Image 1 (spheres, rainbow, N blue to C red):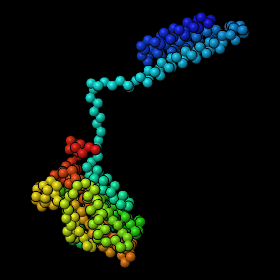
Image 2 (image 1 turned 90 degrees about the vertical axis):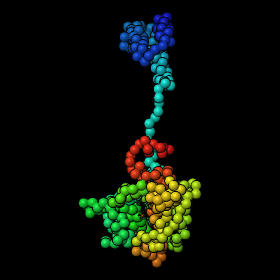
Image 3 (image 1 turned 135 degrees about the horizontal axis):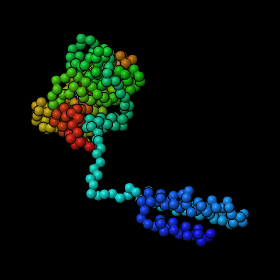
Image 4 (image 1 turned 45 degrees about the vertical axis):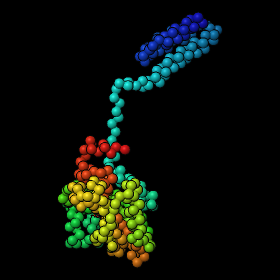
Length: 334
Ligand code: FA5
């Protein structure tokens, strides 16, 4: 019996030394420990043995079966570990991944900068009521400022928001004063399209309300954002502007990076591109948000993120950014 068992073990070891595929090992498994295997026959024969032999061989046969199984399983495991390790260097393994859109990249950059300055990021609906988009922002029905921001009026009585400034009212209503929020988002206008005007573009709104907030605070925040986004010095100019929801109001322009300010089709020969609208929050707007203008003052700004992406990445026509042309967008892979 001992000899027979030693022979089975030796035979298996020899078999397993060969160069085997998974299917071969599974065949060997069935041959050596399967129902019709020799060891299984030996186990079956135990019942006909004398009590003495049973005691003598019972544990030997069982432990041998276990040993055979372990040898086979180890071979299977080694084979699995070996899989996937060999690479065929002749195959082109280029991994095709997507990339962030340039506007997403600058939006993230600006929100990160503002977050470091203590701004909380909020968001509002793209489908908006006239109240939040216009009326609460001191733009009543029939106000000429509505002409500057014509939009898409929906059958359900709502509209596609023309500016992220709707977030000013939502945030004041929700959080009250003091307040420090920014709100990136998509905006829509019925616009004549050209190299720097789209009908769908992105802005980021900012609003700070506290006691004693003034214009120099606003200028400081704008300066920090622009110098961090562009890393190098860029020329900006501040000029008086008009928004019914701020008083005083300003517009900030950036010297066109495509022509260095000389004038080109991108800036429509002006040398400057309008980038930011901003100002001190009008008392009527604070009131609409439930905040007492005799106690609190505030500033707000709206940065054109799509234009910012154009200027940062020297894109000469805004329409590329909504084109979905992958060859073009691939350039910005980060
Ligand atoms: C506004 O939308 C104001 N809500 C900004 C504001 C916020 C003022 C808070 C005061 C306080 P304006 O229409 O100028 O303002 O747009 C702001 C910026 O959005 C522009 O400077 C420009 O960068 C961008 N922008 C405006 N229209 C378009 C357009 N058609 N295509 C691409 N970018 C645009």
